[in-house]
Image (cartoon, rainbow, N blue to C red; front, top):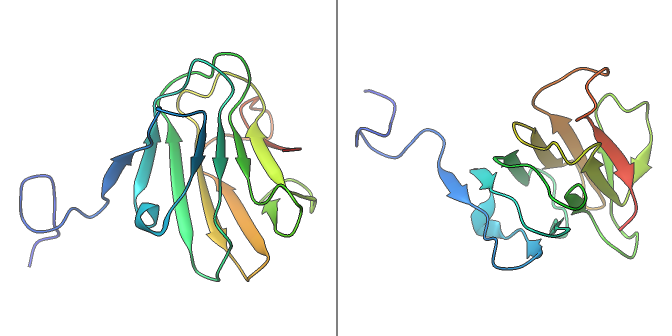
Length: 139
């Protein structure tokens, strides 16, 4: 049986959704899981809020545009109840992460909840020499 595709042979193997640009603050929902979430940027500083982590939840975000005023922040929890550990960042955790520059076009990141307090973040591109790597930040 063929894998589902854009040609109508069943469900697509990777559903694609666009993150709304109607607001500068977007909270990811259960319906956003298991999809490639495309973000086309915002004219001012933007933030994505991750939901309360439950082991196995996952979100994948692809930046399809540059940020304008500051890099887009992805926040685990403004109160610090939950945190994010970034693969390859040397063992540090943060309540939020952001791309290291406003040149976000082509950047991809996947978040997987590893327990009920922590998200793991995996970059889907780049090297440690790439200025677009994720960096820990504040909310």
